[in-house]
Length: 404
Image (tube, rainbow, N blue to C red):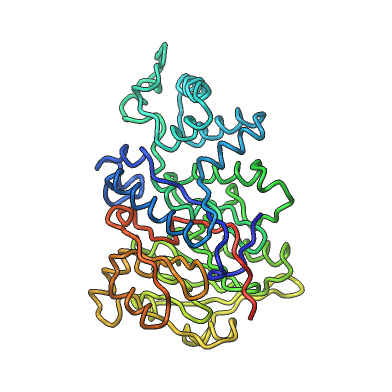
């Protein structure tokens, strides 16, 4: 089941993806296309990710893996396997009918587990024998090393969908490189035995405007914060808000944060996360550039207004408690920019006042400790190369409710 009414309630269940051979299919030529800045060393990235998962388990948290969940969903409903394969091939943007047919046969020949891993890893052209290449389109496909691109960003499970209350927002990814990730999420949520109940959807992957999970923070049972970012369109936020207010009567407010559009600030959670009841991390570089819009539920639909005031005062109004902002990297501009780039503001709360962070951001981590936050540091030399921190790499499925 889905139950996430806060960012900080004691974490009970979480979804991860352990990095695999998709990282070894990254080359300098495809880095920009696939939204990576560097090529992580897979062996160490897996070791670091395993340590991350072990830390979660030691906190009593159930750790679930994407590939296992997809496999279990398809085993529970074998009648949808063909549709799943076809959806993957179709969204891989292959133009040749001959190659589409050969890829379907290739993927169908694998075990379900290996099929899912191969989809994520990417299919190189030498792996599939294509008979009778007669058309120009068939031959043009051979000029690129992959029939289907690897999906390295699936490491960041925060983005393909979001747990909000007892429902989900299925993301409409803003880039072609990430669109196939939501196919896996869709089949898990639709067909896995764990989710066989009527679940409200507040957004869908086929909606018109992009919306990604890193831009959604569930602040309370009544308030959601969202980022207007390079990955999430304001029109998507308005549609989400309308669906949320209609389908979950508890939610009254969506706060839309207009953040600078840059690679460093790709989602709201790269510059702003909650660590305790009234304590947040924030990148100081956005504070003077931040505009907040308040979307309030009304009897007719909703009302939108631009909010005037400090971020602290805005949060105090809606969360009904004093607010403390911990500025990533402190007052030194160089340190602040460096640690934000290395996901110093991207914390994962496992309980109120207890967070998992990357070890490399020592200034921000010490500031968190000085503020009374319990900090669990994890190794990050390779994981950080993908530009995502502990929150980015995880999707909470269940948290205990916060009782004020």
